[in-house]
Length: 340
Image: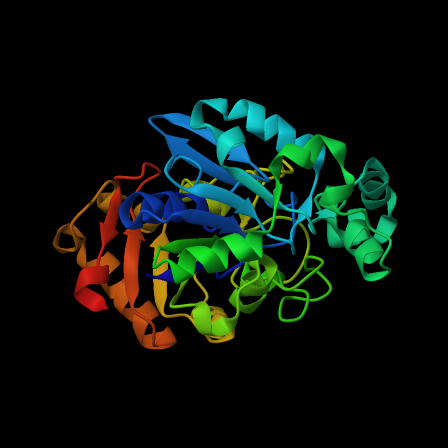
């Protein structure tokens, strides 16, 4: 039995969806539970050349043997969720999905407020998905819960019970965290942050398990970090530099062009500490060094790439165990059996 939390180590967009899909395929969890804020986080999952952009359903959905859970700490937009259930019907989402009956509900009024608020929309650059205003209502104890929404009745359950029962049976459990550590309301680049904490501790609480139940915390870093919206970005490069490197990306939720920077070792160390990282998953190595594209064996990596990985390990004190060398699931180097 292993309980693993996957968490972004930067400002989101680290490629967590690919890492989660890979781990689900290899570790075969019985339940994949989503923590985090809500539909303001988009994830892209590539399967057999087809790309799925999702905001509510856990990104481990391609692994059909697992239940999919949305924890009580997550905000749910019923409109977004039901669209995704329909879009992903070939993956039997309807039969597998559990929405915690205590999850908070985003209503249209929250989205309107999010988009009209000058501070949130213009200065902070939020996604306009209604999460901030909904969390305000949650703190005021006036937010609707999933149990109050008729369209969700077929999916309601107690995610904390489901996850704890699975762990007691000796099953593997995977907890997905959204956004990234540096967007944490407490530890991020305040005020350019999201509306709650986005570290591993909060993700455990979101799905209703205690800290002693967690075995592994995998922090995901992208070789060239990106961020959407305003806020500090110490290692940011110019758009021209990014284009020369062939890095032009757009946010899954907003469609806005992502700002791109060089790897920040100091912030990586901080993220590992905040999350209690036991492992690092590194994505986009093929962007860092194009000669590494599609590699599945560590020994086939260039010396430049190996040196980069060694430096990350030295600066953070955490082993790099999973390396992504391309968008497809099989384009991965897995060193867990060697390094753990």
